[in-house]
Amino acid sequence: MSEAKQRMPTLVLGAIGVVFGDIGTSPLYALQTTFTGSAPLPVIEANILGVLSLMFWTIMLLVSLKYVTIIMRADNHGEGGSLALLALVGELTTKHPKTKWFVTALGVFAAALFFGDGMITPAISVLSAVEGLDLVSHQFKIYILPITFIVLTGLFFIQKRGTATVGMAFGPIMIVWFGCLGLFGIQSIVQSPQVLWALNPAYAYYFVTTDPWIAFLALGSVVLAITGGEALYADMGHFGKYPIRLAWFYFVLPALVLNYFGQGALLLHNPQAIANPFYLLAPAWALVPMVLLATAATVIASQAVISGAFSIANQSVQMGFLPRMEVRQTSDKAQGQIYVPFTNWTLYLAVIYLVFTFQSSGNLAAAYGIAVTGTMTITTVLIAFVMVLYWRWSWALVIPLISVLFITDLTYFAANAMKIPQGGWFPLGIAIISFTVLTTWKRGRKLLFEEISRQSVPMQLILDDADNFSRVEGTAVFLTNIGEGAPSSLLHNIKHNKVLHERNILLTVIVEDKPYVTQGNRLLIDDMGKNFYRVRIFYGFMDRPDLPAALKSCAALGLPFDMMSTSFFISRAMIVPGPNPGMVKWRERLFLDLSKNAMNAADFFKIPTNRVIEMGTRIEI
Picture (cartoon, rainbow, N blue to C red):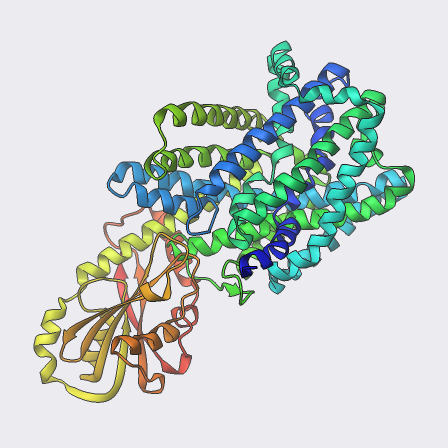
């Protein structure tokens, strides 16, 4: 048996424990909110069957078909998520600058929306579970917010242990959770088997056409059944597409459908159960254990989006959309399993703010959905480019398929836009702020590199004059972002020290539009003569840069390094506003602030601090 097959059960268990937590806890509030939310529906048979049919076919279309079957095929060397898809599409549209600019803007905004979603999911999930205590006894109501706070705080504090550890711990809990969902659902369906008529899409059609406006408003709550679908793609790099697909089709999907139909059967039998159809589905003796199990499950729901947020933050740094920040590798076996402290604690503060501001899952439901549907709509547009340019699918297949998916996504997005005044403004506001930061940093870096390149001196001038300088023992490595010309740190070294090292390396780190670069494609060395070398080190946007390790590999290419006799010269740009700024004043100010808080280059590239010499360079942009 191959190693991949041996690891498959472990990966499936880990995927169940991390990836499906979000969508797996939607039964806690999705059906109830549809009938009791901002646009309440009468709890009658036609509405129950119509809503269930709509939920079922939405799950099948947007999760099973769109994400699990189609979009997970568009992995970027095993990595998923909005920016991984953007990198893939960006590479396909390189020859069309306007199209590339369009898809880049869409992809970046989708990533920004994911951050907004990542803040709401933990808050609404854990709150909805802990609120079950109110059914046990009304005296417990005052403890709901404090318990939610404690649970969420514990979750964010254990993130540094890594998703592998968390996933293996949570996997067995989620197996029990989905097992209970299916079991309680079956028991209820047996009592009212007529609920299975909702499998017929005609009931969804009848519900939508009977009163289109009411149905349109209901879509804003029906979409809660698929929140977490986008996390399946975002977390693909953590566990792989095949374990996620196996877990979805053979375990998670059946359990969810059985539970939703079980809640519907309960409502057909007892419309008053709409007060909390999820918990009332369980026997009275199981209420307290289910509250505890639901709380654990919703902690796992939060894990799905937190893991996805870590991936997107790391991709953003590597692709030049965010300043350098600390990213810790949490597994020596899976490159995609990481922990990003800044992202973790930013999410934590936002989540706690949401809990104490909205105070109930019902209130938070009004804020939930717009980020999810926005991300899904953008993803459909991006996958259309992949279908045409990469997979080479025929237009006869692409046009009808994308039209159905896009119209469905856009309809759900429009329905959720109606909830902006009730709370939808929060994830939308977070997305706009995130988008502004991402694009400002990208634009600022472009202007910075253009100015550095403009000020650079041709290397040939240095080479022509190299024999006139004294040489000292050792190797000097000059980090530079420009592909040609002399780095400013080299010019400053010559100007102030008036010497050259015995051997001089112009080192450039290049991040490619793929998650990982193989060791054989890591290095490119050019001999410039007179003991000057230009070395290019290639990384993927999910690789963790390690310059000393990469330089050791140069020995195989005829350029050995002794780290004890190697000095690294790094230019620290002192950025100041120029007379003709390339950005508006407030964006320029934002870029300067971001630059000041960027992680030190030596730490980011894992260069020993005692081998680093930093030189300041004043740059106007």
